[in-house]
Length: 182
Image (cartoon, rainbow, N blue to C red; front, side):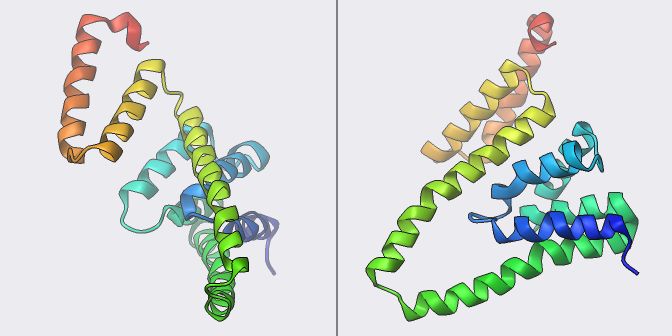
């Protein structure tokens, strides 16, 4: 018989799977809320660590579901959370792709694409805000992250160069002005 923790994992991740327009990043805010605030499976610090690990590992952002499932009920929890986050959206994607191909080029398909674009952007920004909030970033870290993101987007500077610059600047600030970092 399925225990209540496993059922809760499925009930949390299956609907989120269906609303993950724009990829797994779009549901991170809801995942954080459900796993920390609603169910208490994780602390804010644990969620931040798991998010960082899921982003560092190759694969989709939704790998965090397996990590949360592992925290809840080890291997079985990881399996239930993984199935819940991948299977419903895969079935929906298959069905919608068949419809999209059938109605490609119609005014209806253009309206749907135009309507989903701002929804996707909003969900991705909400996910970023949830991670920043759970990481308890100070103002210098937030400015650094925003500047780095803008430089990556608007220039051809590689990420390793920017990471190196950030490390040097942050270290200099820490040495020169330790009171700003706290």
